[in-house]
View 1 (cartoon, protein in one colour):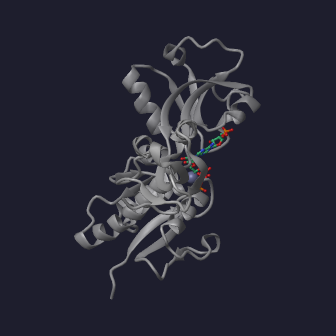
View 2 (cartoon, rainbow, N blue to C red):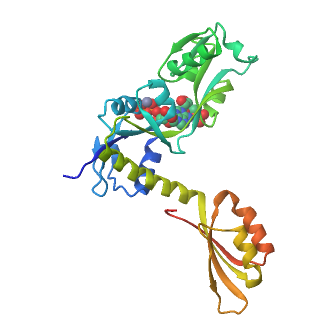
View 3 (cartoon, rainbow, N blue to C red):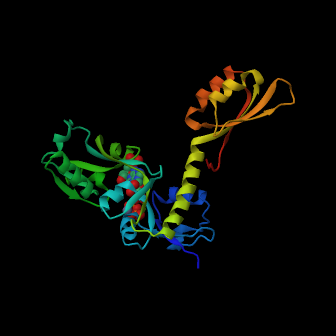
Length: 286
Ligand code: PRT
Ligand code: ZN
């Protein structure tokens, strides 16, 4: 029987959509996670286990799942024996210190002797220890942002993405102690067969994430500009160049990094390029 491995993913919540989108883009045929505990794609040897995100590091440490997708914040907080093998670029957020907006923040010494509410007591206590600050950590599992208003704490340390929850609760963000995004974690003791399946998945993730960074570029150029355009958009190996029916002109195909293409296009126009098309790439294998 074909060897299969298991990946632990969040059953529902902020990681769910990004995780399913990524695995689907990697070609896994996933049915409907929300209503199931396990999913068994028929076209790839990885079974999905749907869990609460907090449980994922432990399941991976115990090898109930071989790998998992979870936020870095949870990995550090749970402190299990797992390896982070790839950052995934979604569910980005930061663990930040926030105080009532009327208070004046004087730097980290502001925290000395204060009562800090957080759901991340391990990360926070490590941070305080490293900075040599004595404060009283009050662990709560949800709605941390209301703690100052009900006199449960003077300070909170919580996840922030847009910042609107803090503002809505009369708080201001004063310092970030950790940046986080979704990552793949793995059990450190995978055998060769298991690693080869993980590597197959990582290869596909790489192809998907590269394709998002690049766009396919098509344009018509006067032959006299071809060399300069090649320098501008060298592509993967080199651009494809085909003659047009109109003499003195050719069609060029290349790839260009998404965050550079507006600058590139301005320069292409100066070189006489016309009919410029920018097309998304679905997968990219170098
Ligand atoms: O049910 P389960 O235990 O699986 O999920 P959960 O409720 O514990 O976690 P969930 O789904 O809320 O978050 C999962 C992961 O998403 C977190 O561990 C982070 O890695 C990541 N993430 C990204 C966030 C946020 N952004 C985020 N904004 N997790 C939580 N928040 C919360 C934050 O705690 C605060 O209450 O959103 C609020 C702040 O948001 P803004 O936009 O107002 O700043
Ligand atoms: Zn959770």
